[in-house]
Figure 1 (cartoon, one colour):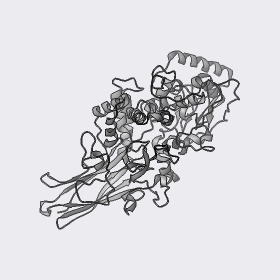
Figure 2 (cartoon, helix red, strand yellow):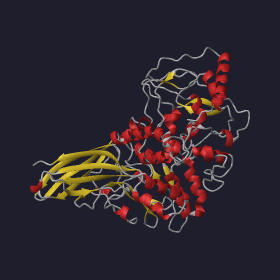
Figure 3 (tube, rainbow, N blue to C red):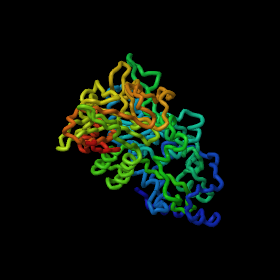
Figure 4 (cartoon, helix red, strand yellow):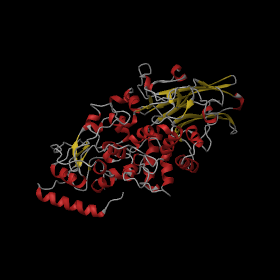
Length: 565
């Protein structure tokens, strides 16, 4: 984290000056796991000057890190906000080469809609530059010599911080009470000047600490519970988009591009588990929030935001070798480990059941049980999971295999990977090696074509992504409905799926070893392959990294069993 030492000297002077004017400094209390009893809330005073939106509406995370650094929990772990954030996906939402390639490909296909595309895609990936520009009456532009991505742009550094501290912590409570909070519909205070701008958090702050923060950062800390609710995440992780109709116009109806919050809302997790419980786990015990002192606070939410995109983290590690991104490959290794832990120990279980040999057929079932509070996979529709199943005889010969994957990330015998106009259906029963159970969403254009282009995506022709526990298919809204053959599968339910396999074998050559794996990719082969038809600097950059970093799947769960004699 880049912290200006002159700024630290200035900050120390502020602390000493304010301490001399106020009561005795607050001693560090003994950390406690019990929720902290808040002192009196300090409210912002009315503005007395105007706000320079482009300069003072948002600040860099480096400013925040000057005080909120070296935060250690009771287990001795460094849980500093900025240190965890800067190594993860949230700090690299603009550096992400797949995001930039996708946006550039949409603009290349629909140049007349460049303004619409950039406005929509900047909202959640570079919110500070976007909303500061909007508040100042300007126009959001990403690409070109005048765009945010150009180093010469005055808001370039702000844009490149991605989803930073003062983007989330400035979201007004009214975002969730007087507004549709989806699709980046964020409400910010656009009037309060520097020094009096509200910055929300779960803890209240005493007067001395509030004055220190206001003087040092230009923001006044305000306690509010709205940052702890799941709907906070829905602001960007429930996204609706317009699409091109058959006549070439933008639709008035909207396509649900991603809906994790709505999926969670229709699950049993909504009763007692929030998004933050999984993606912002609590630290061990209480944590003192700032180098300026104060009491230890608990529960303390960590800011690593682990999800499922380990492949992009690997690409970011590769980028760090030659590109000036926020973190080194070594620093990014921490979120890689946390993401793998989430995928491999907190996502799904798998079992092989009902094994029997009848005549010349080996029959068995593969049951997948999910442990996540939304569909799996969820989020951006490039993600997919699938079953890789093998049957091997005692000599080591493969008798049957479904769902093998090549080094370039292509699933063998997946119709969509071999032909962009086709896709693999959901299976109730698999009897041939060229049938693969893939849990995914397949987009369909208004003209009926299979597509990976978001401006063409009008509906889902297939959505058999695994459902969270408690998900009611019959009562689910159209935006989160099951589509395709899975809707007719009695074994496809909230909490998991069962797929039956019937394999031709010679019983005399047994016993057989059955192995089943649930594999996962955050960028499916077809989604990457379709970008090869474009010739933009951004698609070239991404495809270079795609070739350099193997798109090998993550193993989510696995079981191996030997058939009885």
